[in-house]
Each structure stands twice: as C-alpha cells, then as structure tokens.
Amino acid sequence: MIKLEKVTKKYGKETALEDVDFSFLPGKIYGLVGANGSGKSTTLKLIAGLVQPSSGTVTVNGKQVNRKIAADVSYLTELDMFYDGFTVADMISFSASQFQDLNLETATELLHFMELDKAKKIKELSKGNRGRLKLVLSLSRQVPVLLLDEPFSGLDPMVRDSIVKGLLHYIDFEKQTVIIATHEIAEIEPILDDVVVINKGHLAAHFHVDQLKEEQGLSIVEWMKNNIKHS
Amino acid sequence: MADDYKQSRPIYMQIVDRIMRQIARQELKVGQKLPSVREMAIDSGVNPNTIQRTYSELERMNIVETRRGQGTFITEKKEVLEEVKKKLQLELVGRFVESMKELGISEEEMIAELKAAFKQGEEAEKID
Image (cartoon, rainbow over all chains, first blue to last red; front, side, top):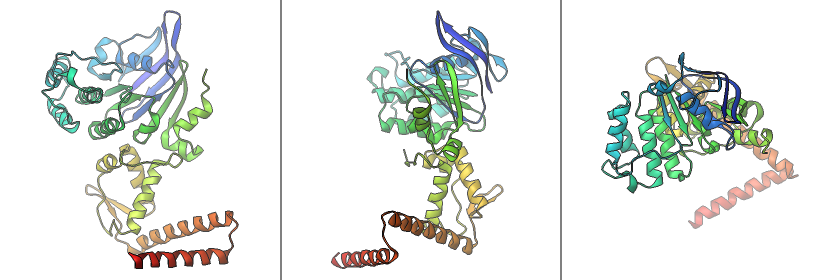
C-alpha cells in the first residue's frame, strides 16, 4: 500500500501539493488526472522518492520513502532518459545492472510483443518506439509499485493500443499497484479501477470508474467538465 | 483499442450485454467454456477486475457457472439461454416501439412500416 499522510510539497514559494491524504491499494490500476501543473507529476515523484515532502509522510508498504525506494518502485518518466549511443539491448542490460528485480526473460518477451529490434540504436528509434521501450523497461521489473507518468503523450493510437495491451498482459494484478498519470483519460478508462482527480494541489475527487457510471451515468471526462473549473 | 465502449454505461455491463448477444446468436453455445478472466481482459482491452465483475453478474443471472479450478462455463440449462434470447428481443422491440411513439407513429403505422421494410428486404435479396 502507498500512503500519503498530510503531504505538502512546495518548490520555493510555489505550492505543488497541499495537505494530501490518500492511500493507493495493491491489485488496482489508478488513473491520476488533472490539468497541467495540478500536482500529478509531483505526486508520482514523491512516491518514487525523487522529491521529498515539505511536510507530512509518504510510505510504500510501511517503508518511509527515500531514494532507496527505487528498489520497490518502478517509475516511468514523461521525459526521455536514454543514452543515444546505446542499442535497445544495451539499454536493457544497463537497466538490469541498476535494478536487481529486472527479469530478462520478461524483457525479451516484451521486446517481441512490442516488435522492437534489440540491435537498433536508440537514436534511430521513432518516438513511438522509444515510448514502447520505456514501457518495456518499466514492466520488466518485478516491483510492488509501478508509476507511469504520461506514458501515451504524443504517441499515435497504434502505439497507445500496444501499450495498453502490454499493461494488461504483464501487470501482476494480485500484487502490483499501478498509477498512471495521464491526460488521455478517455482512452485508458477501460483499464482503470479507480480515478483520482487532482486540482491545484488538492485532491479533488476519488472514484471507482464503474460506480461513477452506475450512479451518475458519467464518464470521468464528463465529470471533470462539470466539476473542475479552469482558471 | 479492441473495443469501443459507451461512456455512460458501466463497462462490465456492456460486456455482459455482448456475451448475451453472443449467446442469442449461438456464437457461444450451451456448456461452452469462457476464456479465463485474464484472457478475456486482454481481448476486450479492459481491467481484469471488470471481467471478474462481468462473470459474477452473469453468474448471478444464472447464465454462467463457475466450476472451481476449471473456469467459467455457459450454463447447460437450455431454458435459461432461451430466456436470454427472449429478453434481448423484448428489449429491442421495446426500444423500437418507444422511439416510434416519440415520433408520433401509431400502432397500425408501425406494423405497416415493419411489413414494408421486410418486403423491401426480400426484394433486395431476390435482386442479389
């Protein structure tokens, strides 16, 4: 379980998150949604131990989060983080050298599934294939927590589809907690259990996706249009 | 995505509807085994917990049975499957009548329109 307790994060005078209390449970896929600058990435970085809260605590399975939490948390950044000169295979072995839980068999399977050529240099990959490679690296790890920051941004529908299928194939639904921060909410709604809406550094809402439809007949996008005002 | 889902209806119910239609068309047969939850999730592009809910709902409706360690099967009871077909028919007809009423069309006109539509269909087949 991931627990945020009274978490506030400030960058200088800017407040990115304010007094957030929330628990993410294992065996669920969460969508984390909100406008740009609402605090989505900050939330993921706090769980990944990449930034520290200004006040409050973040724990993953009872452990207070610090940089060492990387052993329990796989974090896919929205940025590209590759060495251009590396081949796809180099990148996999580099990741394996950094993370003991990286399963090379799964990585090979995933490369095949995503139709990626091991011998190709990363700088020769299309944007879509770099997006796929990032997911291969994240999903190959056997970790309790998987964080994906904008895994679909700028990718065409074919790539999105293969990423969604890859997630369904390789997520361990018994144990893993998956949090996906995204703007492309309509597209991944079918694979989500819950949605957490962040607005201006506050937790604005938390839904069970099907419950929202049963009780209010609304999709997440519709709910957001009705309830979140743009400033 | 493998399937497109309507925004306003819970996805697990949309998959229940789809399975019921497949039963009515006999694409799914008496006693047939359904794919595992994970397989069905991947095929449908949805969360496995959603499929779990679909299967539970179908079980509650007595349309499927889960046998421990073996999987989920369409019921052997033919009368249940007949009911499924009947229910879908009633729903469709109900919706048709409702929409036609909204257009202010009388019962006689509806029946006449239906007959005409069938006749047109038959003639189109002859030409083919």
